[in-house]
Image 1 (cartoon, rainbow, N blue to C red):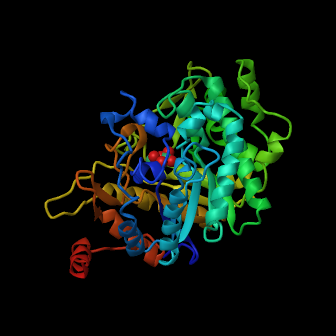
Image 2: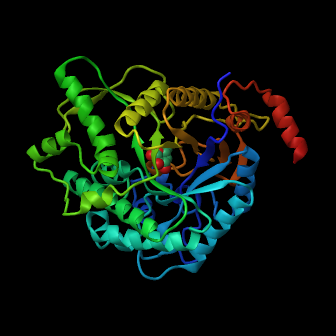
Image 3: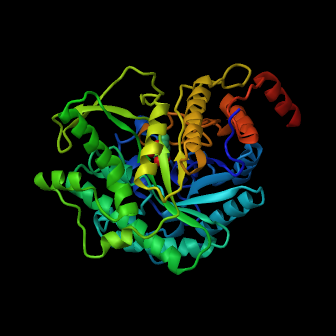
Length: 460
Ligand code: FCB
């Protein structure tokens, strides 16, 4: 039987706005997501993160769940407006206290904290000054990062600067489905560049502060396959790969934007706002690349602007998000990344599935589809490791059902079920299955769920 390495990092992932709630508590300021959610029509069912899972109040309970799950790491994000309510200047001690309690609680349970500095919750006061479209925001981010490193850096030794810069820039400023809801391609390119700059500046602050530990960035990635051998389709697939993956990974790991797409954009009148010295700053050494993987896509030449590339459904099974289930795309992605960046270790910082979970009469959530999804992706990760890919860890999205951005509470990604009427947490079958995988280090676990949950009940 094939096993993951003994020192493999197994964790679950969450983000502040999606789980914390307590949005007006203890001096927290508003973020662009508070504003976006409270604007009619942006979010399914007018849901907001005001209450979310109330993780802020249920910290001990959630820490105990993590301990019982047997993870050895936990990825969370720090809310910028909890630390700096208006994005700069005044630091809110009560915000720092919360993350210190979280980190201490993890360490006392032998769980390694992995902290993300930016998971999309920009303080609204900075948005009013131009948000990420303004270069200054990258400098404010570095000041915020410095505060967080100073407060938590003695205990947190694994840092992610920015989560999914593609989503933050292009869904926030081009498609408009995410906060702040703009629809302008050039602004999205500016934002992407300033997010990369913010990353580079934070890494610089981290290194110059001599903090212990590792720092990297997390990007959302997929494999893009041309539907045919035609030059047009092959170029369209490459364009999407450059737009989504290489546009962010190449500046960070090679110090340059991908040439092909740079000239494609330029012909259409778009340019990233690069200034002297930016690319050197952005490409300061990172210790790992974080990969968020959910699906992969077949691509053909299209008419849409400015990319002229269309997604082609393949008929594979889909998750409740409508995303095709393509575990082999994860393997192909890992192999391709290793070829491009042979020096860099990788972490899967998110992977998981939304399913139409139901609580059965006996209280169980029999989420077999999620187990199948995770199993097939774990197996591809293991295959990549065997083929020499330096994959060091795997964080499941997500620890618990939470506020899924524009989809509100409708889409459930958790391995722990949350009843949003009373916020009760319940283990799904997938949580029990993951517990066995973490413990055994392999995916061939045969689990008698009935007796597993009976024993749990007795323990309670
Ligand atoms: C990623 C986000 C994460 C979550 C998952 C489903 O894009 O980083 O917050 O919403 O998708």
